Length: 174
Image 1 (cartoon, helix red, strand yellow):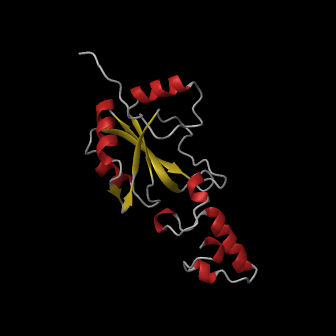
Image 2 (tube, rainbow, N blue to C red):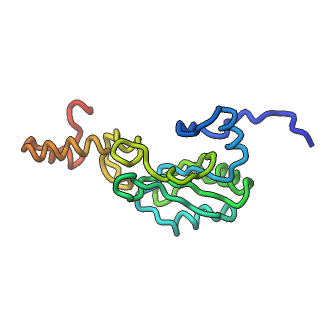
Image 3 (cartoon, rainbow, N blue to C red):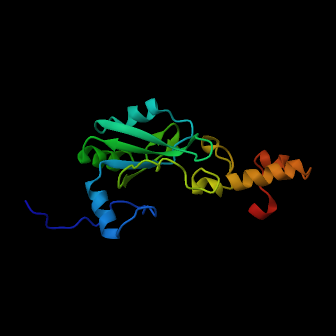
C-alpha cells in the first residue's frame, strides 16, 4: 500500500557536520541506516550494560563506544548498530529518554558508523559539550575541561579554588 502522508517528525535532531555530501544524501543515508547514535552516556557505562538494554529492541550487530581522542578513554557516547532497520526504529522510539546507568540517554538515528567517528571532536579530545560544562557531573568526569583547567590554575597560584571545587558557585556563575 502506498503512503499517503509524509512523516512530519524529523529522522534526527542532529546533523553531523562531518558528513560529506548534500542534505538529501544525508537524509537518504538516515532513512536506510540501522545505526543509532546514543548520547549522554556515563563515562563508566560498560558494553555489557549497554548490550543488555539495546538487545531488548532487536539483534545488536555491534556497539562502538566514543573515546577521548587524546586519552582513549570513554567520553559519553556510542554507536549502536542493529541487524535490521526495524530494530533500530524500535530502539529510537522506545529507548530515547530512558535511563542507563542512572542517566537519561538520547537515542537518535545516525547515517552509519565509519572508522574514526568514535573519537571526540572537542579541543581537548572529548566531546564539545563536555568542554564548556560549568556544573559538576560525576558520570561525565566532573567539571567541564575549561572550568577544570581554570580551577587547577587557581589552586596552583594559591588563589583558593577549593570552595569552587567543593561545588559552590562563584559570583560570576550565579
